[in-house]
Image (cartoon, one colour):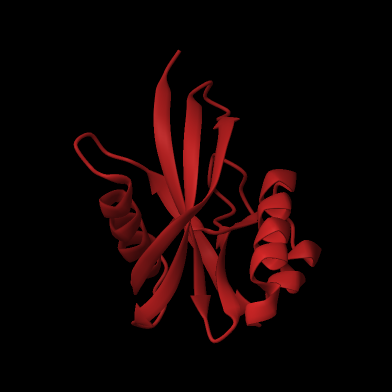
Length: 136
Protein backbone atom coordinates (compact mmCIF):
# COMPACT_ATOMS: atom_id res chain seq x y z
CA UNK A 1 0.00 0.00 0.00
CA UNK A 2 1.23 3.47 -0.89
CA UNK A 3 1.48 5.89 2.06
CA UNK A 4 1.90 9.66 2.28
CA UNK A 5 1.57 12.71 4.49
CA UNK A 6 -0.71 15.64 3.66
CA UNK A 7 -0.69 19.14 5.13
CA UNK A 8 -3.61 21.58 5.11
CA UNK A 9 -4.09 25.12 6.35
CA UNK A 10 -7.06 26.91 7.80
CA UNK A 11 -6.00 30.35 6.57
CA UNK A 12 -7.48 33.27 8.52
CA UNK A 13 -7.91 36.90 7.44
CA UNK A 14 -10.13 39.47 9.15
CA UNK A 15 -12.22 36.80 10.90
CA UNK A 16 -12.80 34.86 7.68
CA UNK A 17 -11.20 31.68 6.33
CA UNK A 18 -10.05 30.85 2.82
CA UNK A 19 -11.74 27.97 0.99
CA UNK A 20 -11.09 26.77 -2.55
CA UNK A 21 -13.20 24.72 -4.95
CA UNK A 22 -11.59 21.74 -6.70
CA UNK A 23 -11.70 22.00 -10.49
CA UNK A 24 -14.50 20.04 -12.19
CA UNK A 25 -12.01 17.91 -14.13
CA UNK A 26 -10.03 16.97 -11.00
CA UNK A 27 -9.76 13.23 -10.39
CA UNK A 28 -10.21 13.53 -6.62
CA UNK A 29 -13.47 15.03 -5.29
CA UNK A 30 -14.06 17.36 -8.24
CA UNK A 31 -16.29 20.35 -7.51
CA UNK A 32 -16.01 20.16 -3.72
CA UNK A 33 -14.83 22.92 -1.42
CA UNK A 34 -11.76 22.47 0.78
CA UNK A 35 -8.97 24.25 2.58
CA UNK A 36 -5.60 24.76 0.87
CA UNK A 37 -2.92 22.09 1.13
CA UNK A 38 -1.39 19.00 -0.39
CA UNK A 39 1.18 16.27 -0.05
CA UNK A 40 4.61 16.54 1.52
CA UNK A 41 7.61 15.93 -0.68
CA UNK A 42 10.58 13.87 0.46
CA UNK A 43 12.94 15.78 2.79
CA UNK A 44 10.38 18.54 3.53
CA UNK A 45 9.16 19.49 6.97
CA UNK A 46 5.39 19.90 7.40
CA UNK A 47 5.84 23.70 7.63
CA UNK A 48 7.92 23.83 4.44
CA UNK A 49 5.43 21.64 2.59
CA UNK A 50 2.45 23.73 3.68
CA UNK A 51 4.11 27.04 2.79
CA UNK A 52 4.97 25.62 -0.65
CA UNK A 53 1.48 24.22 -1.23
CA UNK A 54 -0.21 27.48 -0.21
CA UNK A 55 2.05 29.45 -2.55
CA UNK A 56 1.48 26.97 -5.42
CA UNK A 57 -2.29 26.70 -4.99
CA UNK A 58 -3.23 30.21 -3.81
CA UNK A 59 -0.23 32.48 -4.40
CA UNK A 60 -0.25 33.99 -0.90
CA UNK A 61 2.13 34.12 2.05
CA UNK A 62 0.98 33.00 5.47
CA UNK A 63 2.26 32.73 9.02
CA UNK A 64 1.91 29.05 9.95
CA UNK A 65 0.80 28.75 13.56
CA UNK A 66 0.06 25.67 15.65
CA UNK A 67 -1.08 22.25 14.42
CA UNK A 68 -4.86 22.09 14.80
CA UNK A 69 -5.99 18.62 13.73
CA UNK A 70 -4.60 15.25 12.66
CA UNK A 71 -6.66 13.17 10.24
CA UNK A 72 -6.34 10.23 7.85
CA UNK A 73 -8.00 9.22 4.59
CA UNK A 74 -7.72 6.83 1.69
CA UNK A 75 -7.57 8.37 -1.78
CA UNK A 76 -9.51 6.96 -4.74
CA UNK A 77 -6.17 5.57 -5.96
CA UNK A 78 -5.83 3.45 -2.81
CA UNK A 79 -3.07 5.59 -1.33
CA UNK A 80 -3.43 6.05 2.45
CA UNK A 81 -2.62 9.50 3.83
CA UNK A 82 -2.15 10.92 7.29
CA UNK A 83 -2.82 14.64 7.38
CA UNK A 84 -2.01 17.57 9.63
CA UNK A 85 -4.08 20.75 9.54
CA UNK A 86 -2.39 23.93 10.75
CA UNK A 87 -3.88 27.28 11.71
CA UNK A 88 -2.40 29.97 9.43
CA UNK A 89 -2.70 33.75 9.35
CA UNK A 90 -2.68 35.53 5.97
CA UNK A 91 0.35 37.84 5.63
CA UNK A 92 0.26 39.18 2.07
CA UNK A 93 -0.81 38.65 -1.50
CA UNK A 94 -3.98 38.34 -3.51
CA UNK A 95 -5.29 34.83 -4.11
CA UNK A 96 -4.23 33.47 -7.51
CA UNK A 97 -5.43 29.89 -7.97
CA UNK A 98 -3.55 27.05 -9.63
CA UNK A 99 -5.33 24.87 -12.20
CA UNK A 100 -6.31 22.47 -9.38
CA UNK A 101 -9.00 24.89 -8.22
CA UNK A 102 -11.69 26.88 -10.04
CA UNK A 103 -12.93 29.28 -7.33
CA UNK A 104 -12.03 30.71 -3.95
CA UNK A 105 -13.88 32.57 -1.22
CA UNK A 106 -13.01 34.21 2.07
CA UNK A 107 -15.99 33.14 4.21
CA UNK A 108 -17.33 33.31 7.72
CA UNK A 109 -16.50 29.84 9.13
CA UNK A 110 -20.18 29.05 9.82
CA UNK A 111 -20.96 29.57 6.10
CA UNK A 112 -18.84 26.50 5.26
CA UNK A 113 -21.59 24.22 6.57
CA UNK A 114 -23.72 25.11 3.50
CA UNK A 115 -20.93 24.32 1.02
CA UNK A 116 -20.42 20.98 -0.72
CA UNK A 117 -17.48 19.23 0.94
CA UNK A 118 -16.44 16.09 2.77
CA UNK A 119 -18.07 15.40 6.13
CA UNK A 120 -14.65 15.20 7.76
CA UNK A 121 -13.86 18.77 6.66
CA UNK A 122 -17.25 20.00 7.88
CA UNK A 123 -16.37 18.39 11.23
CA UNK A 124 -12.93 20.04 11.24
CA UNK A 125 -14.37 23.49 10.53
CA UNK A 126 -16.92 22.93 13.31
CA UNK A 127 -14.03 22.14 15.70
CA UNK A 128 -12.33 25.34 14.51
CA UNK A 129 -15.49 27.36 15.22
CA UNK A 130 -15.78 25.84 18.71
CA UNK A 131 -12.16 26.60 19.56
CA UNK A 132 -11.87 30.06 18.00
CA UNK A 133 -15.45 31.40 18.11
CA UNK A 134 -14.53 33.89 20.84
CA UNK A 135 -12.05 35.46 18.39
CA UNK A 136 -14.65 36.40 15.74
